[in-house]
Image 1 (tube, rainbow, N blue to C red):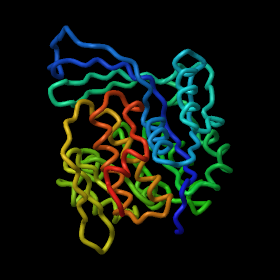
Image 2: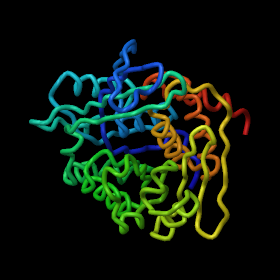
Image 3: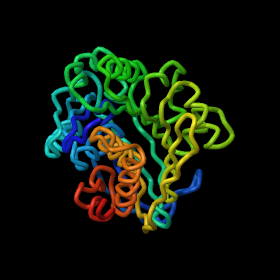
Image 4: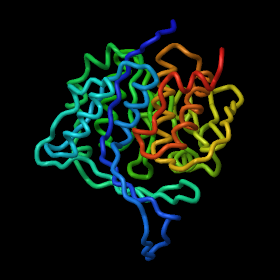
Length: 309
């Protein structure tokens, strides 16, 4: 693939408004903890990945569902401000826009997230097929699992039919099982350590990634938080990409940042290791900022930290 300075990417996924409560630490079950600070941010795995890719330098189209309400209108306006094509971010009647309730522990930046049923759950395969022209003209299609599986399958099939790499962020799990035939349509999967175990049933991440490869996935990139990421390919040894040391204050959206940047790198023509290196650096920056979409770094920030080459 030749290098493309502004690749076209289609992201098919969820949009949420994140209501974030930051506490000294995460509460224990049954515990009430006063004294937190409240914030509202744009989120949702699909929308986060779209913003990450747009700030990484891609031309992005977003396919998703929203309600005819204040949260939905604000979400659409926010994506549009990022330069994202929202023609396929449709209003689905009788469904509220997505909302997520997030607790963050200030001590270590770890989080707990609950997501309400919404228009994200009403996105259908037909809605995805209506974006077939955008998919066919893209250099990568990205999809998380925060939408119905039929929409994910439609996205994978549309990308495969058009010869466009399909990048699956298999999160959250175990929200829905990924059928084994789907893996044959996946160019690159980006699970974290927990997700790769849940998806594969294996006892460790190495064995889990190998299982996904055996099911047909071409590449698996397991994200490791502060330890970076690990690349798995068939018939070759795993390759580790370390992360620089940073002081994390909010890990919400870090995986989405990684996936959006990885997709942009691959769509630009970078080899997998180079694309992962950029994605690790971008995610490392994102955890030093609060909020999901607000934390996504700009292309210049990441490239300046990586240095020449």
